Length: 259
Image 1 (tube, helix red, strand yellow):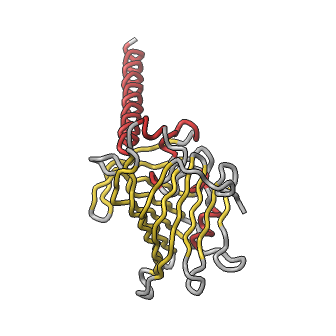
Image 2: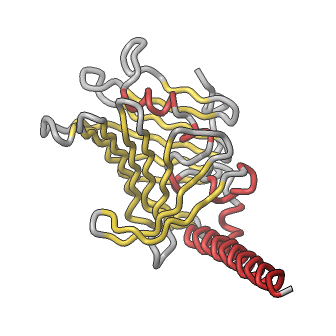
Image 3: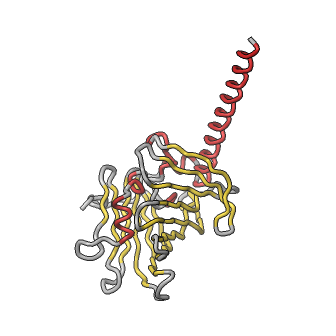
């Protein structure tokens, strides 16, 4: 009898801890979504279009920067990113997700950039709605129950001198990517995503978000940095500055066409 009582007590403690963890995660998710805006303001978004400038450079190579234009259009389950550079430098990046399929256009003839190839091969970045963070209307944490993905809290980590909370995103579908989301502990804002791949030439893609401003009752980032690092240590960076954002606009019928 005593043994049974001990077993029941241990089971009760384990169950209580699990319930506590679930409650903490639910509270964290609530606080994060509130950091974007009220439930009413979030629910009102049918689509979002942001335009701005983008610069590209190889960080540990030539000091030269190449400037271009960027347009990021998103809706629930849909994303369209265009980064256009002068043809003599770096033609363009065009990434699309239409809810069912994804597409990454080649930058020159039939060749994709290493960035485009990574996104195309590991398109869960797009299909899960992770790409673009909270700048995207497809951000999966706004409707986590639809994707059946899991979040696992990894605690406070120091990243580039800042203390951030790391929460790993585990998609329902098996992936060889390790997906780390980082949030400010004080504001609950999502400020960074790291995609780690341990077996391919391109090891790491990192997105960083900063300079949040109000847009129609929502706090959205105006600085979006996409950084690529391969196994050889080469580091390339897109730095995007959003200049204008609009929501619930009339979009062209072919905006999210997969080509």
